[in-house]
Length: 491
Length: 128
Image 1 (cartoon, rainbow over the protein chains, first blue to last red):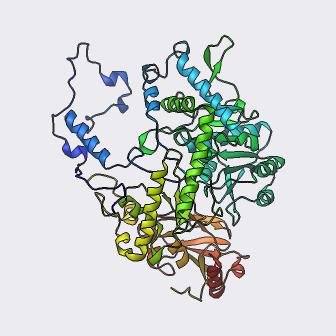
Image 2 (tube, rainbow over the protein chains, first blue to last red):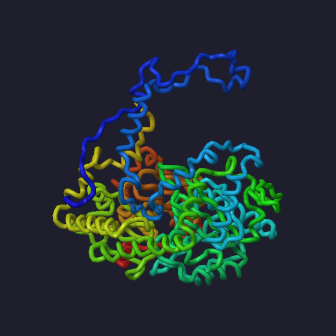
Image 3 (spheres, one colour):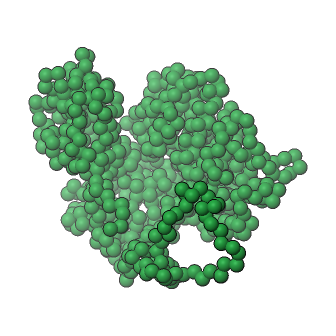
C-alpha cells in the first residue's frame, strides 16, 4: 500500500483511567482551608447530598495527561487527514478561530455578567445574527439552539406558534425520502406528524408530488437543499410557492448550506425558516472536537416568536437583551454555545463576502473532481455525472460481493476516514463523500487513488478486504454483537 | 433462498401467512439482505389496531433504522417477544422463527391486495 498516507508506528496501550487509580494518590495540592468548613447538609437539601465520596480515579497529573494524550493517538480527526464524511462537512477548523475564542474577554466572561459589562459579546452575537441573516436572506436569526437538530426543533416550534397566531391548527409535515433522519425526529418532538414524499428517479423532489400531498392539515414542508444526494432541487422556488399557496410553511434544512454560500439564498427562493450548522458551514469544531451550534433564521412573520432573550442594539449604539412577549421562551440555558459563535464570527470576518463565494465554488468543484476521478470504478446512481458539494457513489459494481462496509474499512487501512455509508437510504450501499473546499487537489487525487486501489483489490484479493482494516490497533469489530448485546459498564 | 409460495408479499417487503382469521407477519429475505445484521426490533403492542401501509414498528440494523409497515388491516394478537433478546432470529430464519406479529384480520383486511410469490419475484427483478 505504498503511497497512501496511512503508516504503522509504535502505538500505546492504555487502560481505563479507573484501572490506574491507587488509593490516596492525587494530582492537586490545595492550600490549607482558612475559613470555617461549611456543612453541605445545611446549604443544600440533605436528600441531594452525597453520603459517600464520588468514586473518582485517584491518579497523578502526569498519569492524567498521558492517559488522554495516548487515547488521542487512537483517534482520527480532521487535523490528521482527509475526512470526507458526507453530509457532515468536515472542513478544516482554522486555528485563528481558536485564538479568537480564547481571548480572555470572551473566554473568561461569566454568562450571568450584567449587560453593561458584556457589551463586546453582545455586539458579536448581534453582528453574527445579521451576517447569517444576510447570507441566508432571512429576516431575523436566533443563535440559541445548541446544534442542527435542536435548530430544526426550535424552528418548528416557532412555526407552530406562528400558525397558532394565524388561528391554524395544522400538524402534518411533508418530508422527502432523501431527508436526514433528524427531520422526522424533530417533527415528532414538536408533536406533529410526518408524511413522507417520494423523490423522482432523478433523485429530486417533483413539485407535482408536493402539490398532490398538500392539504389543509399540512403545516410545513421540510426540505434540504442541496439534498442528501448532493443535488440542487432545481424546482425549489415552485415547490415553496405550492406550499405557500396551500397555506403551509417551508423549513429549509441548512445542513448543506456549504454548497450554495454566496450563490443562492434560501430566503430568496421561498424558505420561511432554516437552521445553520455553524459546526459544518462555518468551520467550527465538530464531532468529539467541540459542541455544535444550530442558529435559526426566519422570515418576518415568524420573527416575533424566536426564542428569548434576544440581543438588540439601542439607538445610542449600546447593546441590551430583550424578552419579546411572543417569544416561545428559552430553548437553551444562557445564550447557546457562545465560544462556537466567536469561532464562526471570526471565520466570516476573515473570509468576507468574496471568500464565502469561493468556499462554495471550491466545495462544489472538489466534489465534482472526485466524481470525475472515480466514476469509471464506482457507480454514481444520480446526477448524470454532476453533483454539488458531495458525491454519492455505491457498491453496485464492486467485484466478488465487496460491500460498502468493506470499502469503508479498506479506506481506514489506507489512512483515510471513511465517507458516510448506507445513507441516504434511497441509494443501496451508499458511499457519500464530501471533500469540502479545504482539501487540496493532491489530497483528492490521493483519496480517489485509494478508492480505485480498493476496487482493484476487490477483484484480485477480496478476502483481504473482508478482513480490513488490518493496520489499525484493533481490526474489524463485530458491530452486530456490539449493538445487540452492548456492554455499557466496565467489568 | 426462494420466496415460499404459500405466503403473500408486499412491495415494502413484508410477508403474510393467512391461517383462518389470523395473519402472521414477517419481513422477507430481500429485506433482511438490505438491512444487514438486525440489532433491534420494536413491535406494536398487543391489541393495537394496525392499518395496511402505515408504520407499526421499527427494525434497526447496523446500517439503518427502517419502518415495519402493516401489510393488512387488523388487531395485533401475538408478538414474537423472542426477538427482544435475539434479534438475530430475523437474519437466521426470516420466514420462520424470525416472524414479527400475528394480526387478527379486520373485516376489510386488505389481504386481496397482497402479491403472490411469483408476482413478488417479478417485482424484485424490476428493482435496479
